[in-house]
Structure formats: structure tokens, C-alpha cells
Length: 181
Image 1 (cartoon, rainbow, N blue to C red):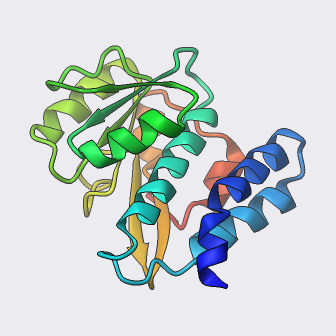
Image 2: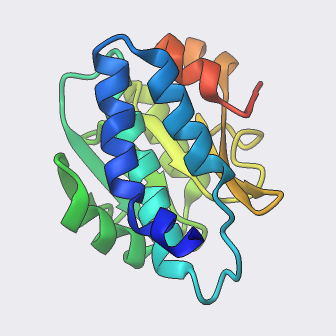
Image 3: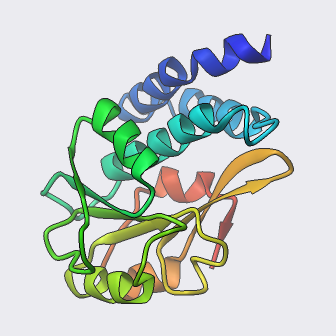
């Protein structure tokens, strides 16, 4: 049953979006809770599914950033997530070769990305959202952190930093965050 649930993650994510767009937040919240409650199990065996979950979260954040008109997701490091996003995102997805995030609407900073602090600084200067699965990313100045907690993928938001760099998240997204600082 868990395998069938994981296969339908993309369909559940689409229902999440439709629920938010139609104002049916209870459907959207139920869908996201289901996704975050899905066990990730063995990280080695499920790496493709975890990548899909992370890509879906990135797509959610891209849709619910209130102050962006551009539509470009940049990925620093994590070539597997880059490839997954390339095949699933409706936005333009580019690999960030250096640390200049000025042309990005959202930057995913992979665990293996070099120059994370410089990328964050560049993104901050343009009000670009930074998201990562690096530990303590919120404390390092990032805006969104994806992490595993009790076998589930969760996310946290750095609301103080978002206000400082003039990034606004949709209120429904803020309600769904596992932690905010």
C-alpha cells in the first residue's frame, strides 16, 4: 500500500495545488499532510522517490512565492535533483554554475554545492528564495529548509529573513510549515 501511495505523489501534489487555487485549503492541507506523513523508509532504496518529493516541494514553493514574476529555478549542486526538476517543473530550470543567483526566482542549494554563503548573499540582494536540504540551512540565512523528521520530509521557513529581503510566502504555505524562525 505504501508503494502505491508513493507512486501517486505527483497526483496528490496536483490536488494540493488545485485545492489552494480553489480556496479549498482543507483539501490542500490534507494532501500535504499525507505527503509529509509518508514514510521515506530506506534512503538508499528510495532516493528516486525522495528526489521526486523534493522536486514537488520546490515546485510548490515556486507557485506560492508572492513577489516573483520571473519563472526560473536555479539548482546549485545536486545534479540528480536538477535532472528531476528538468523533467517535472513547469518553470525554466537551470544549473547554477557559479554563485550569482541574480537571474533566479528560486535557488535550490544542494548539500554538495560550493559557496552556499555567497549564493545566499547573491539571492538576498535580489529577493530570491533560497531552499535547501542542507542541515541548519535556516540558521545559515536560507529561507526554506527541507529535512527529514521521524521518517518524513518536512519543511521550515525563515520568516525573519524573508521579511528582511522582502520575500512573501502565501499564508497557507506558512501554516503548513513544520517550523518557522
